[in-house]
Structure formats: structure tokens, C-alpha cells
Length: 463
Image (cartoon, rainbow, N blue to C red; front, side, top):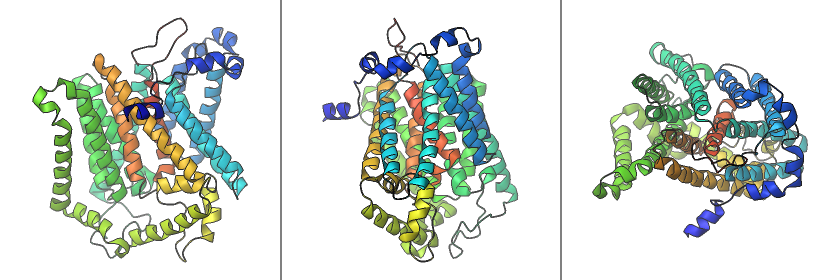
């Protein structure tokens, strides 16, 4: 079974044989190498890439999606310039193969779509978000640059959370009907900060909680650890006051996966009697904390209990009707779906929708992926997640040998992916640019830890 898992997740795959034998690689990669050697600016290529990404993530919560799109286009142009002028390798990893396969299937789904023009728009958006993954995986291989970009995001998230904290104390005017008016929590104040939607805000802060928790261990100075603790506390208070059930599920998954990989990191340092009980003890503690929160905190109890009353809650009833229509769409387009993007969805969904239940998406990431790219696309996406988990385990083993604190960024990244997927079971805010870019960034951070081979050298052991 272990051999099957390692084979399926490409644990022993290496890009070097392909790169040395690919005519296209030799023709394109490095074709502008001579120009780059004479360019003073391109000596700082990785730093320039990080600056582009930093601008994107520093502005994302506060600007329009149009400006985010422009920044993504600029990032795509810079990534192409990097590849054409690269002196070493493409920095390919097994994760790149998973992403590439998913993109290829989405491209085929676009070509075969019943609404090809709308699907093409979705394909362009998907391709631009994949640029975030490819560029971050390429320029974040240096620990200092990786930490710098994460720090920029954490400080931006802190600004967002501080404004959300202000809404907690001084109130926030509801911008839409986010709560069932007949529920016990109908009169609660759901904060939304600069994101304009409490579910979106909760999703945006999922990686903030993961990376601020990681910063507690990755930042070595006590002042940095104190700042990370403040970030974690503020983010937690604001997420709690979004009253987003999906966001809470995502946060719970994030914290659990972070703790699980942290136990894996520290397991060999524990006394022998504790090692076998570390993970079962973590599971028991998790169950205990959840039960105490659900039973002892009335707002949490009310929101969680609404999950189990089915159609008795208006939000549940809406989602169930949308999911039933989406399942019919999948039944009629099982292999490659209808093509990527909300424009394609908006063209096809009205043919299946229940009366009075209009929707802009499937309200479930896995259902959305399936309706857009079919069961083939869903399989490729799940394979990509499996590769990411295996790469995290492999790189943690390597980093553990040198007790490298950068490992906690890696743990935070995989915890973020888990949190987004858990939140995405019942919502699709994952597709909003502010969140989708963070998901692909987290995947890029995991890929950036893959050992790279420089010309005439051995694979690097420090990432």
C-alpha cells in the first residue's frame, strides 16, 4: 500500500530527465539568458517577483477585482520573462504536474463546453490564478523572501482584522440578509470588515490564523512571537464574530491539521511513552474542545445547531435546492462538465434551477469543480491535493533533520489548504480573487520547499 501511495503521489519523480530530453525546454528556457546576464535589474529577479506578489496581497482586500486582474496579468508577464531568461531550471516539482494536469483538463473542458465563450472567460481567470502558484513556487525558494511575503500578508490581514474588531465593538450595518430572520441568532452583528461579506471575511482570515500560528514558531525574536500572538488573538476574535458556519468549520480544520503536522514534527523529540499517544491524544483533545465550545457558548451552539435542522434553516434550504440542481447538471455533463468559471455556470444553471432559487455558483467547491470540469477534473484536483500532502510530509522529514523553523510555514500552508477545502464544502467564497489567490499561494509555498538542482551542484537541502 505504501508503494502504491508513493508512486501515485510522484514521491520519487525528478524533473531532470525530462528537462535534459525535452526539445521545447531547451528551445525556450534560457533563450534570453544572455540578455539577463547583462541586465542589472534582473539580478534581483526573485526579489522583483516577491515585490509583485506583495503588492497583490497587500492591496487585494481593499481594491476592485479589476485591479487584482491587472496585477495578475503583470505577474504572468514577469513569470514568462523569468522562464525565458532562467539560467538554471524551471523549478518543476510533482505539484507542478498536478496543477498542469488540472489546467489541461480545464482547457479541454473549455473547448468542449456547451457555452464556449463564457467558459473561455473562466479559463482565462483560472490561468491567471495559476500564475500565483507558479510565480510563488519559483521566487519563494529563498527563506528570507518567503518569510517576507508571508509577513506582508499577515500585516495586511491584521489591518483587515482590526477594522473587523472595530465593527465588533461599535456595530456594523448589514449589507445583505446573511442570517435566517427566524433563527436564534437573527439579531447578532456579523462583521465583514473591508471584504463586504462575513463569509468572505472568515475565509480570508483562515490562512491568517494558520500563518500567524506558524509565525509563533518561525519568528525567532520574542518581539516577533508577541506580535504573532496578537495577530492570532485578533484574527480569532474577528472570525468568531463573522458567525460564518462554513468559516468556523474551515478554522477548525485549519487548527486541527496544523496541530497534526506539528505533532508529526515534534513526535521524535517526545519521550518514548508519549510518542504512540501523541496523535490519539490530539484527536481526543480536539473532540473535547469542540464539545465544550458547542455546549458552553450560546452563539456557537445556536449557529452549529442550525446545521442539523435541514430545510428548517433558510440558508440550509437554499443550499440544498442549489445542490440538487447542480447534481442534475453533473448528471448531464459527467465527464468534462460545462467549462470553468461563473459565467458558464450562470448560462447553464437557469436551465436546472428550482423556482426562486437563483445562484451564482454551486455553493460547494467540490461540486463546483465537478460541474465545471467533470468527474475527470475532480479526480485530477483530488490527485493534486494528495501530492501536496505527500510533499509536505517529505519536506518536513528533510527539514526536521536540521530543526529548520521554516518548516512551520510549510505546516501553515498545508493547514490553509485543509481549511479552505473544509470551508468550501458548504460555500464557494474560495472562488473570490482575495481567497483564490491565497489558496494558490499556499500551494506555491509548499512547492517552494522542493529541493532544487543548480547546474553543477547537488540538490539543495535548505529551502
